[in-house]
Amino acid sequence: AQKITQTQPGMFVQEKEAVTLDCTYDTSDQSYGLFWYKQPSSGEMIFLIYQGSYDEQNATEGRYSLNFQKARKSANLVISASQLGDSAMYFCAMREGWYGGSQGNLIFGKGTKLSVKP
Amino acid sequence: EADIYQTPRYLVIGTGKKITLECSQTMGHDKMYWYQQDPGMELHLIHYSYGVNSTEKGDLSSESTVSRIRTEHFPLTLESARPSHTSQYLCASKQGQEQFFGPGTRLTVL
Image 1 (tube, rainbow over the protein chains, first blue to last red):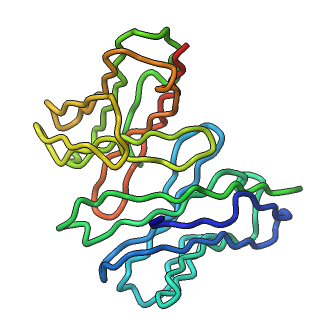
Image 2 (cartoon, each protein chain N blue to C red):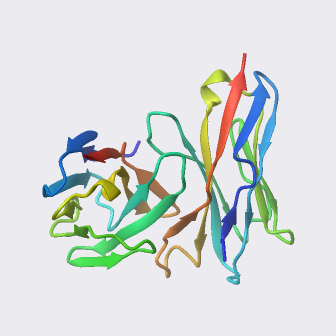
C-alpha cells in the first residue's frame, strides 16, 4: 500500500499568491514525522519543514507552513506569497517511529511540480 | 549549513564499466543513506548505514553495493554498469529529525 500520496502531479500559481500542495499518508504507528522537501531543477533536495505526530501546533518556517490534520492523515504544505524561485518539485515524506529508536528512514511521495507564473 | 559532498556530479559511462559514486560528510553523522531517483519520480532508498561497518539494503532492490569504513565516507559501487542503472543517485546523512542531502550524481549508462 502506498504510504505517501501526492495527488497533484503539477500545480500553477500566480506570483505573490498562496498555494497549497496536498499530501496524505498512511501509517499504523502512533509516532511518526512528516517532512517536505523542495527539489529545484539542479537536483539537490532542500529541507523545508518538519511536523512530528505529537506536535499540537502546525509547523511554520518563514513562508512555509504545514497544515497537519491528524485525523484525516493529511500534511499539506502551504506556501504564502509565492516567488518565481519557488518553481520546483516538492516532495512529501514520512518517517515512521521515533528518530532515536527507529531506523529513521524516509518514505517519499511521487512529488508535485510547482510552477510560479509572473 | 550541511556539508555533504558527492562526486562526480555527472557521469556518462559505457555498459560493463565498474563505477564508484563518492559521498562524504564532515558533520560526523552516524546515519547515512543512498537514494535512487528516476527523472520526475520519487526517491527510493537503496542502501543505508547506521555507522562504521554497518550497511543495510533499502526498500528498492539494487545491484549496487556500499561500504562504510569511515564515518565520513559512504561510497556506492556498481561492478558492471548497465543502461537500466541510468538515474540520479542522492546521498544523505541524518542528525536528529533532518536528513541532509548531497547535490546528487546524475549517471547515464550508454
